[in-house]
Amino acid sequence: MKFILSGDTHGTFDLDKIITFFQKQNTTYTKEDYLIICGDTGICGYSETEETKVRHILRNLPVTTLFIDGNHEDFEKLNAFPVEKWHGGNVHFIEKDIIHLMRGQIFNLGGITFFTFGGAYSPDRRYREEGISWFPEELPSRQEYLEGWENLQKSGFKVDYILTHTAPYSLVTQLRDVEGEYPLNLFLQEIEEKIRYKHWYFGHFHRDMELDEKHTGVYHRLLPLR
Image 1 (cartoon, rainbow, N blue to C red):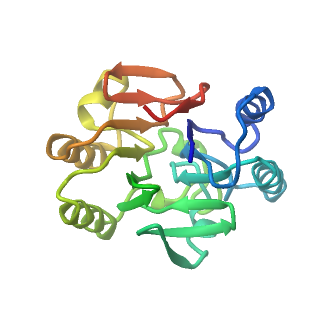
Image 2 (tube, rainbow, N blue to C red):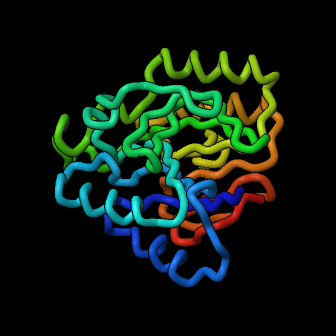
């Protein structure tokens, strides 16, 4: 079982990196291997035509695609899918091999555990239209925060990997202002200070970053799990 991490794909706009990666690989992949996208995918996007193209491309990859949500998703479409249980956590099956890992969940894949918590604030929301190109659900609800914390308590605050779209407060303030996102960043900071884990991956900032030995921002590069 192999895992490949990627950052935001924004519909087809940033999807070439994934197509190119798998075209150039000499490694054999199967649907038992996973591509994980850290938010802003366009899998449930604002344009039906674009969404159809994205799903066609991902459907034809040699791997199964897992994704967390970012801030640029059509949450009305995304949340219309039924909630199902998969490898210990709640998911939306967009297709049989395109799976949304919901917020605050812990998944066990081949003995490797992942805590997932999507969502972020759209700094460009003033240029977008509510219910059309941005949705209030981009930021977590109180219930999602509570469920995430309760699941971490059940795990003894120990997982192998953390997958988020944005990042903990102490990291975000190094990168940009926390306008509108402070409660989420602070929640992730509380997790950071409590939990034991191997590595934390996030997207959102459109940069490839190794902030320290345990925090990696993904965007253009596709990376194996550390």
